[in-house]
Length: 591
Image (cartoon, rainbow, N blue to C red; front, side, top):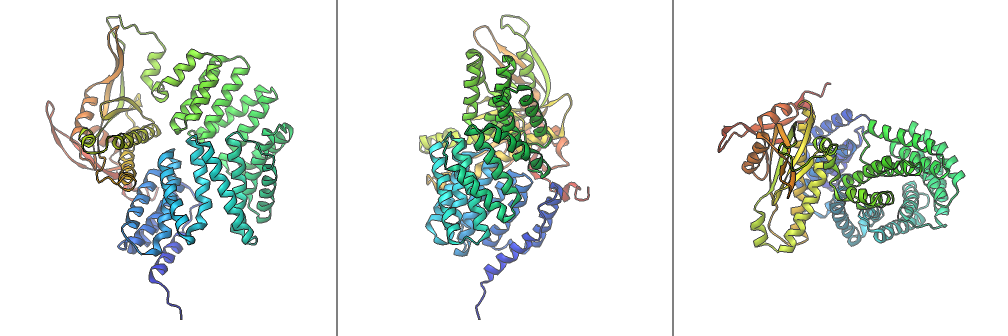
């Protein structure tokens, strides 16, 4: 009789509990399923390895609901546990955790860190024969990440490796539906990636036809529609305009009906490109307007396809001699590129704008595009302000102000390798930039080894905006987990990067300072000063928020009193943020 490994049996029980959960419903239903799964797996959390397996499965719920920062935290906790010495049976889970971290970082447009985790997963898969089956998926994701980083040769190499491996596995087991499905997806991905890097290979047409045949045989509708959409893209690229238009017109309503929103948007974008090529500008503009409006409805505004849609709208406006509108759309496309962290999108918009007006194009590239969209800056850009005037322009607004400071940065520079410290801080600043922008804030200025960010509330105080500021701070703390792990694992450093964060909400003033020699827009006010003071008194693991911020968010954020003495203000009410409240703690489980 074969003895069953108790650990393997426990892992199967965890998997069975996860499989019994329904992840196809609405966001609230999925989160309720997560609560149920947490309760059912609580007994496994005392075992280091099994707790990591549970956390990996919990992250899938959060990825499904797009709670990527929390999913990242769970996966980092899982990886830390798995690297603490569990038995070899958990090697596969270490790889799966690194792979999932690659997906989560890609979803947050954090491509550098995604590449780092995927490289680890790749090393594990190549070193253990039993893990080689994951290489195709790893190469697929690496090709996408490399494309976003502008590393075209690497992207093409990875997607070619994905195709090669999936073909080999499919050839060995042609009757295996899983292998067939993976191979068909690899063929579609190969076409998409080679097209994206500007290569046209006539042999790709046969690959697409083969993928369509496989998906049709497997009765895989989503795969079939994706392959047919790629076929339409390839037809357009090879100047089969009529065939591409007919195909995309047939596909678009089906994709919308099936809820394949990203694919529907891609189909709409392709249709608009075709109509522009046929000089049917009104039809192209109509499709693009529908696409942009729909993206706002379904919360898919920050997607690469949206950057492409704004760029295409700019091209349409330019060709009908609406140059001012064209520049606005090119600027919006560049802004999307900035938020997504894809430099080539910004450069593409700049080159197109330069063909219209090289001076305005220079402004487009040089400005902080998100900052330029801020309420006060948008207002002051609409009028000319002279630094010679005695009365300076100023505006009063409601905002949450966030201060971040890297702890002991100067001392870190002295006791560490200077190039290493600068590299890691530079990576961290890039990550924090993306976090602030993702939460609808913007960085006002850098202050030595920190910065000040603004989250505008509009005409009245908003709980949602205050929560955006707090979650941005929490995400910054989470970002440190990877950077400090990288310091140890890649560079062998025993030092950790830490940050302090303070947030205050209230009235602030935006105004112009300086004289005719130098002028600068900045933000001042008691709330700004308080945020700065709270930051200086925060500990490395927690952020401090003021009473107003706590009052706005106390139903959805767990905090504890941490009153502090501030010179000039005396004893001041402050709160230490612990975490976001879960559903049952907010009393929302029944709503």
